[in-house]
Length: 114
Image 1 (cartoon, rainbow, N blue to C red):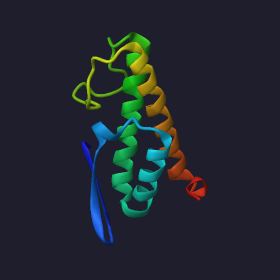
Image 2: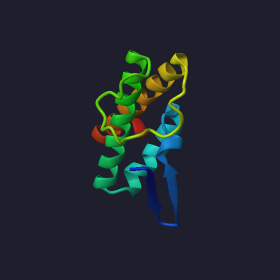
Image 3: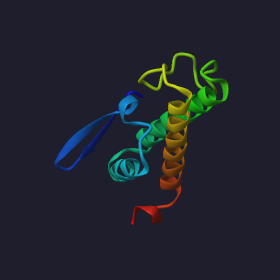
Image 4: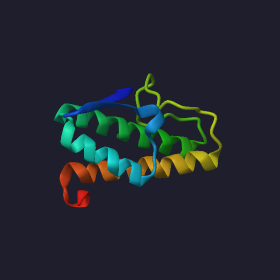
């Protein structure tokens, strides 16, 4: 999944996942509210898979200083540059991990959306 198309009553929005994620929690929360209310279960599952792979990719990058792709398919790419410094990789991993955790929380419990 490279793009996420969110259709709602008075329009639509196309999110380029490689550019949007990893992001800060406020941005993720806003997007996940739209996803929860306007996307099918299959689309939410694909987004969850993307976020999982992104987290695993950056985890492997941090642990191996860029030598390992982690638990993701060889043809999968998070988008963006692989030329990040170790500090940038750690920041992206932290954000990707928090994005994935927030997404998982959304799929289980609606309380955080209030």
